[in-house]
Image 1 (tube, rainbow, N blue to C red):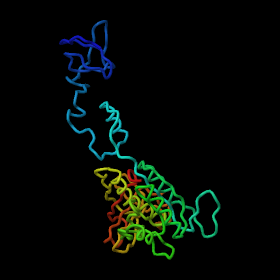
Image 2: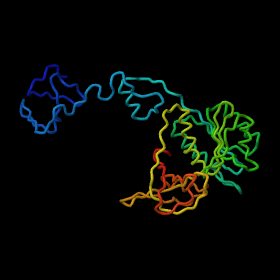
Image 3: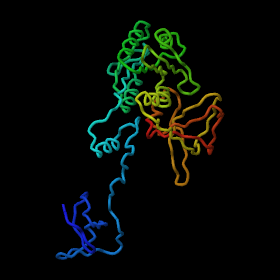
Image 4: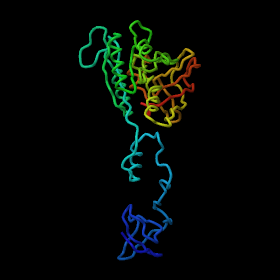
Length: 323
């Protein structure tokens, strides 16, 4: 590196990222200058102080680089490294045990017997939980027998911080999850005023937090992304929680709705060059998982909404950043 002093009317060639020599106050990129022997011709239009990166312009001395509770993504890891810090204290990954329940649920990889359906919920949850960086304990499919469920809850509560189940929380004769929660721990609530996803249980089994999700595939996704994901982030130490992204668009569909519950429809945003609107993404049944795959947003209808007509204003929650 140049160790002298740059005087008025003088220039020194340095490499990108090098320290500025004493006396210099401006950088001109070499692509725009012309050299002739020991003279440099600089074009007009240069500004004093251009292209400099001054000490402290990124972070001031004594300032906070990353507050506690911040998730470490690519930018945060790079920022930590730029400060020369080799190690930081972090929360350990959250341990999450999850399983599906039901005698009618079959694991993939074998032919279905009469009355069976393949287990999609475990794979949905696996994908969602993997994105959060949780340590996962996949416990498979648990049959509708009290002894099998009790053993699964006991094992899960000993190994995990959080237990997530799908199925077994409605009012069917063989829906044992709520009963087991009450006997082995506590039930905080087991119904929500939403559609889909009304039968959702929350409570504890011993020291583990338990989320009992519905059995219908779309209801699993709605309850997970609207309620469970933020709770998991909180348990992971994330503060503050990222705000829900919602914005208003015009409806490109008509629908009648019962009052008293919030509904989450699957929609697809469209733009005609002047305005943004949303159409429904296929059939809206709670078992129609293809509607989630085809959609790019939730259409959120509040509990006091009675109907929607084309052109009405509705609020959407984009999947980007959520799913």
